Length: 436
Image (cartoon, rainbow, N blue to C red; front, side, top):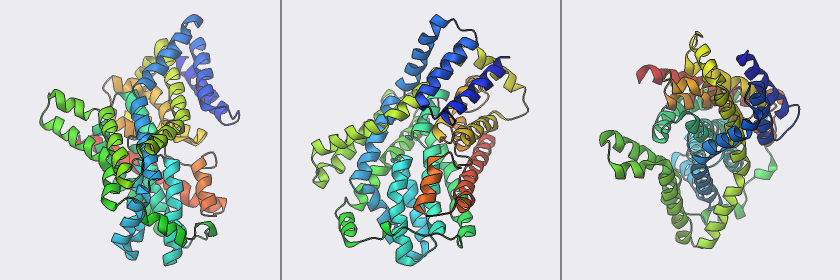
């Protein structure tokens, strides 16, 4: 009966988000209250459960998400992201321009939120299309596949960070495993799949034809070395400190230096100098950008908080453990189960973030019981949350409109690409699981 109640609550959540057009934070709270009452939690105890769930979930993520948003916005606003893309295209040349854009999308996608990265990459993609007269979807899709993978797999993006909090995963290990899984997924969904799309009809927008003013603006940005170092510094430091902790365990100073909030704070302070005064930008201007960045993640934090409230209600009622016990008898691997749940919710709701953190609340007890690696479960649920993107996903419509595609061709290109990313991600996680 408890499982039926949970399924009904998830269906209600989906209906509120889709048919009801309700704000995601409000929908999570409403469903959490209904679930708590239905599962037998005394009414007077439900508010305390909501507050505990919100505090436990957001408390550990707030610093990382806020600092990640600050770094990403400064990288975009300063022109560093543009510089990275231009340097890669110039270095690899016209013959490998597709790979240059893919690499640029991957590097830019690490610090930038998905929507920002998408809007930033599209004009660069079209400038290459116009310059070399290349097929638009064939050239552009791999770069956007790279953005999608970083959004779903790699911290400090909101969804992976939220999943790490749910599963108590190590950020450095998650990042290393994520890179191992991400690269093949991008290659398969990008350059390999896009070969089939060379003849797809598309009408590029005249809006993105490069002009001399844009070229001057690009030339005025930070240097290549500074741009690459600032964007990739969090990844480098997290990997280095994680490896050092494996080689030299038990060192307090190293444990402190390897904590994700400490790493992100250091990177944000470095970026404030390298992309601020070093480029002639005042500290006050940098702090203004940082302040604006925090506003950008307000709704994301509220959505994660709402999911935390629902998770806590399920935990306090005891239903999470009962479901976990029932799932143990299912003939399906826990990692595949997490992926499947996220994929189903993604198809219904459209939001990768909501799909991931909702599914995580269901399978977290399996991780707590030691049935799956926390880091691999982050990646598995993340891969599932990227599955089949269609008409209920904002990314689907952004791609359709920017590339001026028909609905049919958007489904055949964008939706199939996202599905390949999800399936390849699961395959990579399962292979890693057998090795580790």
